[in-house]
Structure formats: C-alpha cells, structure tokens
Image (cartoon, rainbow over the protein chains, first blue to last red):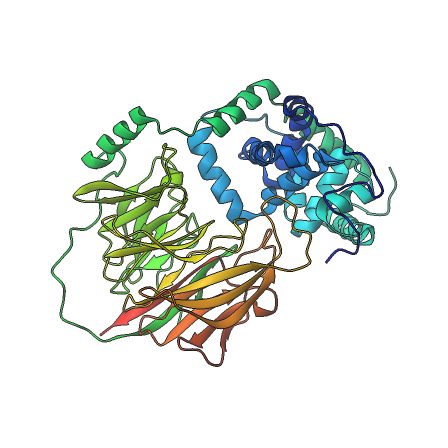
Length: 178
Length: 346
C-alpha cells in the first residue's frame, strides 16, 4: 500500500487537465527507450513485443492516458510490469508470434554488457524495475516511485539493494566512485 | 572499472543496440489494434493443415483411443509442480522426470505412467516416467504454451491465441482431424480436459468457463472480478462434477492503475459445474505475482483432496480436503504456476 497520494499521476492542485497529446507523437518519442527498458528487463528476444504490448495498452486507453500529467510514466510502468511478469509474458509471446510476424532481431550486446543486464534481470522484480528505470531514463527517485507505485524511501531501498547485488555479482566494489 | 562506469557502458550499449523504427512499429500496432477480422485464407489453410494432421502435427500423433478398461482403483501418488528451477516432486522421487519442460503446463496421463507437457521447441510430448521414453503427441508451429492434453492422450486442445486467427476460441486436434470451438469475446487461456474427455474447462480474463468437447454448451461458471486478474487454469474433480479454481479479487485500497499488474488476493474455491454453486476453501495469499509464480491447483486422483501452491504466507505446496477442512503443508519449497497430481491405478 503506497502512502504517496498518487491518483492517475495527476499533479495535486492542478486546475486544468493537460493538453491531450497525439498518440503518434507520443509513440515515436517514447518507443525507442521503452524497447531499451524492456530489453534490460526481459532480454532481446521479446523486448520489442513487450514494449509494443505496453504501447497497445496505452493506445486502447488513450482517452484516459493522454489526460494524465505524465503519460510516459504510465506506459513505462506498463512495460516494466509486463517485462518481469513471467505468466503475462507468455501471453505476449504468443500474440507476438502470431501478430507481429518476423522482424529483424536486435543487435547483440557486448559480452560484458550482456552479463551486466543478465545480472539486472536476476534481481528481485522490483529491484530490477527500479534499477532499469534509473539506468535507462535517469529517472528521479520520485518519478520511479510514481511509476512503481511505491514511496521514494522504498525506491531508494530497492536501488541500494540492487546496487549491492550487482556489485557482488559482477565482482565490483559498490562504494568505489567512477 | 567501477560499478558506475560498468553501468554507464552497459546502458550505452543497450541503447545503441536496441534501436527500432518507430514508424514501422506504429504501423504494426495500428494493424494489431484495428485488424480484428478473421483472416479467412489463413483459417482455411490452417484447417487443411490440421485436418491432414501431417505438417503441423508431425510424426507419431496422438494415440487412437482404446476401449475403456474395467473400473480400477485410483489412489494418489506424487504431486509435481514446475517452478524456475524445473520440475519439483512432492512425495517419493520419480525415476525418470524430465528436467525442465518448456512451458509451465503439465499434467499426467490417466494411467499415471506418463507426464504430459510441451517442450520449448513446440513439441507436445508424453514422457514415460518409468523408462524416460518420450512419445510425440503433436507439434505446434508456434510454441504450444496453452496446450491441454486429454487424460487418454488422444486429443490436444489449443487456445486460438496460439494459431494465426483473430477469433477467440479453441482448436481441438486428434487423429480424426481438427475442429474449432468458438468462444466469441472470450479468450481462453489453458484448456483443461475432464477425466472422461467430454468437456473442457478454461479460465479467461472474463472468468471461468466450461464447454463440451464437441463445442456445445459454452457456459460461464464464474465472472472475473477484474479482467486484469491472472486467468489461472482450473482443475477437474475426477468425477467431472466440480472444478477447483483460483479466484482473484483486487485488493481494496491499492492503486491498481497500472497495466496488467494488480495486487490480487487469491482464494481456492470449488465450483459445481451443473449448478454453478461455489464453495470457498482457503485463502491462497496475495501478490501482484510479478516475477513470481501464481497459485496453482490440482484435484487429487481419488477425489478426496485438492492440492495447491500458494503465494505470500501460503508459499509452498499444500493439500486440503475437497469438502473443506484443515490444510496440510506438503512442502515449504515454492511451487510453480502449474501443479499436477499423479494417479496410481491398481
């Protein structure tokens, strides 16, 4: 249960609803990093499909999503949740196979970077989501909390634990500054 | 290299190598959203392929049904669940258990000799638990994630989510060919056969349903409280009169605005198929079930018990009397999202 009074990510006290966005512009702007987020959390094979599925959900609910203060947080949350949910991912995989057809696969990462993202995917779900949102979007703590529906304190805890776990897995010192 | 440097390099590499064409993707999204009409050419082609039973269903094929044997005594043997680490057996270890089936839908043949599951390459197989020999039942062009095999292994039901058509329903394949079972507006997930092979039950985002194996009598037994709740496969009682089902309710007060992941409180219920009457047996825990397995349920072969895996405070494998009563914890290890109870037939 979140103690952050978030409702539809609306800014408290805001008088006017945000100007409705055109979905196409939103899609073009948001999709590339959404695919990156999905890939970080569930691997290259279905990253596009997961991102596409999140966007399809936004498209279906566009009348609602477009009026949110931060529609991009809504779709990033949808993508992050879908990416870590094994059961739901199976449904995405099925629909992707039959609907989206063959596509050029994403380029492979360097081995050491693939190792890094494999370590991220092995984190507990919420830690992985918080870490991926932080890394890929450089999202502020408050925004991560909004996206994941948890308090900033919880986000910091997730990030801290993720950092320790990644450092341990990769044989690095978590305290060493770059 | 510090962790921050390593992170930076990994992020940069991920961004650079994850580029997609958003214009092309948008066109495909719009096609997916708007293109709901049945592709008749594809349906006809699929029907031909499945009816021939050759290309799509490979060698071997399902066994031809044999005459019904004399009534035998059935008792309960091992429980098997599939989790991240593979197949987990509760009870006496079985001799020849496959390490890791491709997809988390497992069941036993009616005689208890074979484990039925789908491999990662799309083959639906029956694995003999004494010899380890695999018998090919069928093969899907796309992975048969939601393949339900009848207890006599003569029929395989697939959700149409797995075949290139847009209409909701099931496709049932057997030696005699294939047939469609339409479920308009309802997208079946895992189809589950009654022991006698006459009916199929399935969960869908809209709730719990049952339909005749011949496509007749589609009925909703329970409506889902929220279509975002996981549609988890039910389990038939051996006599075919009831279903054990994992019912979900959104947790009140939670901000469940996010897509497809809502905090859900699960309860094990039994449903009388004829009347629709429901009996609550036990809570199964609460979770969003992200990255973790969801509850699963299996009616015992002798009909007396219902086995289940829970979440949260109900992590592990349990059994409860089918009429209700005290829980017995069979294992503290986390079960998976598929549970099967092996029959021992004397």
